[in-house]
Image (cartoon, rainbow, N blue to C red):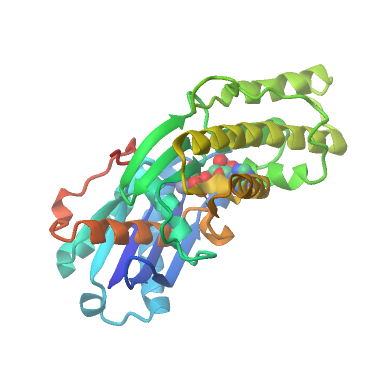
Length: 351
Ligand code: KG4
Ligand code: ZN
């Protein structure tokens, strides 16, 4: 079956078409993304109303381009179902994709499956995987983005158990804030990880918040503050920081931020006896995190999955994949477009 998915939860307008064959394989027919990152960079973060306005401007073109790239000539005959992100995300941004999807679903009388954005990130692992993802459950999902830092047990598609999450900032947010303190651009994650390759990760001892806490939770606001104090104590508050010191701070920050995730993931994977460790979310683009979790999985003798680099950032292909499995699980549902509405604070479906 062919599925068309729409994603507008943040600053990327994205449409994708996939072909679902069976439980095991998905073929990606097209994935088109129009990014607004340059527009928001000048404000140091995403401005919801601007994101919404850009989605309105871009969505029709992105939609038509996705159909063309997938070779779809007759929407009504060739598309079997639609999928749309309905949360979590920025309300004004989500609304554009949802309204566009509902209009199409109404016009062409297609089922419309609402998908959780984080469920989408998790399903980026099903797009062109290194090895087919068969017999992977239960898996420990490390879900890390600009808004989320979660350890989630995945028992099946659409069946999650939240093990732990951040009490304050998300890890991606901490990367963005630390980058701002170092005078690097937005988004900060890619800038910090690039600079960190030139720095010494052992140069500055930064805190590992909540590492010893007997749970799977995180806290990143203290780490950001520690970077602020370090810059002040080194005498560079409000001044230009020399390049090597900047690189050493970036590397030390990254080491601390990732160390906590890996150690807590290790504890959770052992406690819950999982078969797989699975990484997802925008921060899954971080090479150090990818490598550390790969070695952890090898050390524990379990499987490892991380999304291909191109699918780590927001895209509609991952939303389509999540929607496909949701549809397979509940084919009896009518998936009526009129019951789809936005949920900016939506949590993963718990079992
Ligand atoms: O999932 P995503 O695209 O958007 C949200 O749903 O938040 O994640 C974006 C986040 C940003 O905070 C960005 O700085 C972070 O992912 N990020 C990274 C890297 N690439 C993106 N963080 C660390 N290292 C990276 N290489
Ligand atoms: Zn995202």
